Length: 470
Image 1 (tube, rainbow, N blue to C red):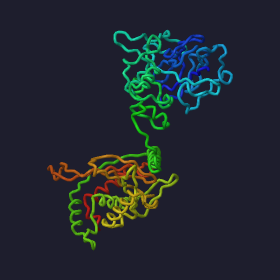
Image 2 (cartoon, helix red, strand yellow):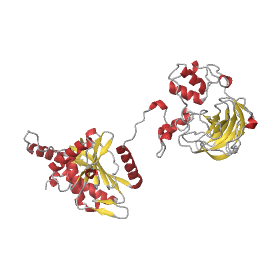
Image 3 (tube, one colour):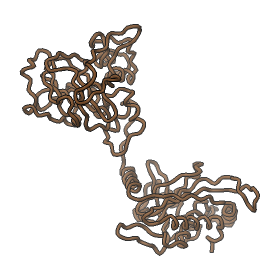
Image 4 (cartoon, rainbow, N blue to C red):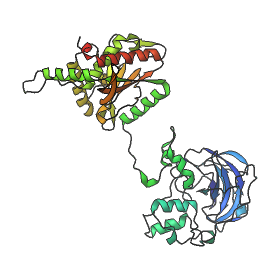
């Protein structure tokens, strides 16, 4: 049965490549590990190795051809004992595309009756880069080990490294004793290292790229990749797959859209908390108790933050608005969402009319919201809408961060931890409790000056908290 050689994926993101040079010609005998051709991408020139023995019967893509899609048929190898002259390309010579979900090389039949062969790839040597058929002469396969050096194909080295196989203990069956993939698999099956997998990796899951080439891609997987492409950045046994639930999918979708659609800008202020902390202590001490002796309320710094944000929106009414594509919606009261972390995500329940509610009411509402959020018992109307949100990571010791706006809201306040800092009062240094807050603004609704006015109003309320009781 003939062996179909396909354009390999040299990286997880590769879609097309240039066939720079054929290093074998029609009629040449090939063995596993022989270099067949050089493929160019925008980043490197790579060598394509044969993974099966036979005769190169037909070359279907001429050297110098640009933009050959991954998985297109580029050549056919006549298997051992086959007449190369009798080999025909599937579909009368047309190069078909393989199914993107095709299984292991040499085990998956193609429509033309052959088998697919995803050739191995290796970085071409210095000076071997070629275009339009011009380049270095073909390289011969590596000789057997000499002076203690182990000769092995890049794919064999990568698999050996992943599976913990000592190449020095593997007998090579490739050209001139070179260790090839089959030898490593045989060693695994014999009990060296981990058990051999039932099938070879899918092309998209394990791109045939030498480690030196794969490393840069692993550093940062770009957005918009398929699942198989992302898997291709990592060794198979280095991760576990966690299926996405509906919440994680929604968070990912909405916040990605927020960063892509809403033009964010950020404004940061430092707020002194000494007066607020003193007032908080006084109010908590004055709280009555229930029949079972529990306090009627216990105010947190976050309760003051929510109230201050609600009042700030009313003092700067132009900022109390959201974007509605063809218009801006301005609200009569302040609706402030509060981020509540739960396992696997977060909810943002909304305190309605935050400007009108007392601190104790806000405190008790938030305790109820937080408990029901963690139990996933909030009603949709309790976490939908809102104009702004508060995200407080101070309890984790975070000093400063920026938050992503939660659509359709037009801002979000990121609150850091309060800490003792040196400040200047009346021209002299003093110690104060200070909190850093950063407002993320949707520039479609809030311009810089308007955002500054809003966060300045918030700062004034935090530093003069008695104004929240009036």
